[in-house]
Image 1 (cartoon, rainbow, N blue to C red):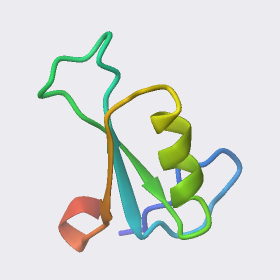
Image 2 (image 1 turned 60 degrees about the horizontal axis):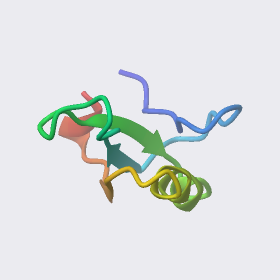
Image 3 (image 1 turned 45 degrees about the vertical axis):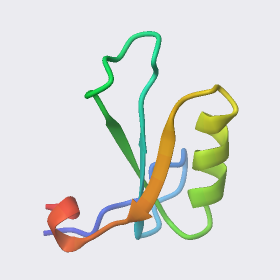
Length: 67
């Protein structure tokens, strides 16, 4: 199994966090999207989504999440 990669465009670093979000205009409350993030981009991805008023949470990426 390969390590999860950061979702930031152009970044191929190993991810260690998950950015969980949804667009409330098109997603129901139970629908969640997940981006993976390396330490260098977790704040960027979280802030990008928060600036659009999307509900967003950041959590550690565990081995079961990566599977």
